[in-house]
Image 1 (cartoon, rainbow, N blue to C red):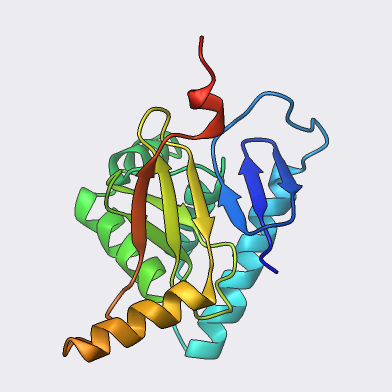
Image 2 (cartoon, rainbow, N blue to C red):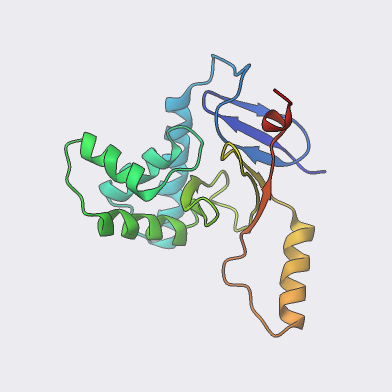
Length: 181
C-alpha cells in the first residue's frame, strides 16, 4: 500500500495512498510547526552529508532552509532574493552551485517543468520520484512508486539506456483547481 502525504504551507496531512503535495490549501491545520519541519529537514541533511562525507556549508544549509520554508517549489532567483534579505550578496552562480550540491546529496528535487526546487521528504532513502505538477497553481505532488521505478529502469535498460536522474514530471490539474468557479 502506498503512503500519501499532503504538504501544505502550514500543515501536513497524512492521507493513505502515496503522494506529497505542496502549496497552501484551504482548511490547513493551524497547529503545523513549520520551524520544526525545517529543523527536521536540516537534521536529515546533516545525517546524509555525514554519511556521504559531503560538506554541508552554512550557505548550503541556508539554501536548504529556504527551499523548505513553505513546502512549495521555489526558483533559484527567489532563493537569491531571500539570501539578499539576510544581508548577503551572493552571486546567482553561488546559489546554483549550492542547489546542485543539494540535488547531488539527494536533499532537494529539481522540477524542470517549473524551473524550481522542492525539498526531498526522504533524503535518507535513495529513490526516484514521480511528480504531478498542477499547470494552474504550481501545486506539486510526489508519488513514490517502486513499481513505476522498476518499470522505468527495466524499460530503459532494454533500450540500451541507464537512468541517470529519473524524475518523472506529469502535468495535471489538482483537485482544488478542477473545482468549477
